[in-house]
Image (cartoon, rainbow over all chains, first blue to last red; front, side, top):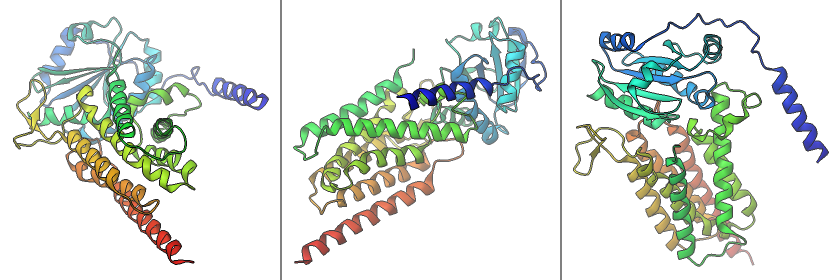
Length: 158
Length: 223
């Protein structure tokens, strides 16, 4: 029992000491986007889009980030990936992007104007748009590999 | 709250429970507990492997371990689950054989759970039984239903067999690996599934069966 308590204490100390929240983020500030800007963004695209809503305080978003990274590496040449940071701080968002290399454009939507108009609930949330900006599917919660791949395939085959 | 994954787990549990109830089997203690324990070990092994591969430190992000929906590494989940089931019964291969059909049924139930999760569909197909996503004209293979049928038929088949100790377990491993291998080309994924692992697992299952048969013959032949 004493060993278990010692191990737990060590775990907490290591976890606390390893935190690097004081570091200055390397990622530049995210551009702010409103509903009109978002609609214009989609209208200008010549390919389908996957829009992922995330926040730095959201633990499931961290679970999802590596999958988005891999999906972007595989489908990024045929599908536009867009990130929307919701209800967050610029600093938190930049630290998140420092931690997870998500090499696509991210926007800052602190009040949630864009996602309120699109519907759905919770964070993370993923929207799938056909060419021209038609919303095809909304996925609430952490998206799994199979669902993401299926919806992207659906977008590409339309 | 999103509970579809829970429904898929309950479907798997129900399939294993029914298989165990329908058969009078010889497993030392609490067969269902053994299957559930193996599933939990496999799930955490797979999740741990997935977050390590993604470069996430589990010491700094312990909460990531329980976010199963974030992804589970199939290879480590399979190895962890199989080891947790097989290691305690390594001296009682007959008991392991008796559990194998229920384990296959659980895998079938898990795949059939795609109905709750709306994740049954795979590659595009024009076969008469193919179906489309809501609002879409594109019909697709119900690939997870194929997998569920594969696992269920394996469970049924191996429940009928009476073979030397360890042989049914080996054949069940091969059957499971082949079921996944045959359905993999139809399964949507990011970067492809662990095809090489399924090939190795199928061969390992055959090797285990051959070894079990050989061992049994040697014992029978010796005075």
